[in-house]
Amino acid sequence: MKLNLLAAVACAAIALPAMAADVTYRKDVAPMLKKYCVECHSAAAGSPSMAEFKLDEERYAKKEKVGPLSDTYEHLLQLVNGNSTGAFMRRLDDGTSPYAGGKPGNMYKYLCEKDNKDNNAECAANLVVLKAWVGEGGWNLNRMAARGDVPALTKEQMDKLKLKY
Image (cartoon, rainbow, N blue to C red; front, side, top):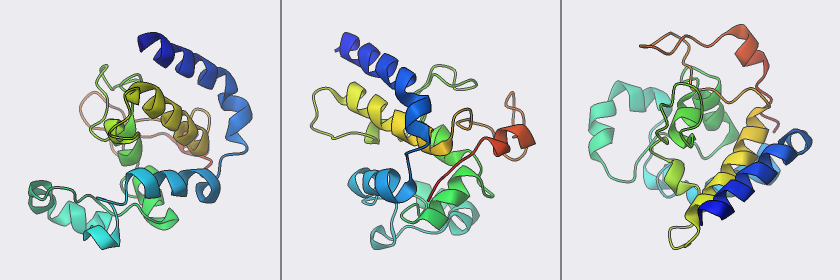
């Protein structure tokens, strides 16, 4: 299983630059979110906007299967490059990004089928698609303001975000 994961990641890393131009929200990201995320991150699930979530994060943290809305392009942009910059990347990161400390984000495990015996390869492949959508060099765990050892997002990092609709 480890070999499959390494092979998937290696192939994906080679294909990422060519894939980046072709990945769009409508064609690639929205179907993935619909398949893996809407159960907990949609209006139907009772999810709040990111602003509402931040205002009462403690209350929402106690609710199972409820996270900030990310079921539309506009909602998702708030988590990628809006007021909650980097939240999407921090939650879905596989632990290999700078500042991740080798620990995957708390939502990484949901990038694949729950019953899939080879979850790691499927999660890794889906993460490659998301990274391609964000843009080469755009995937980072930074926030708008520095926190702890993690510096604030730079203009250069923001300029790398592609996020094609």
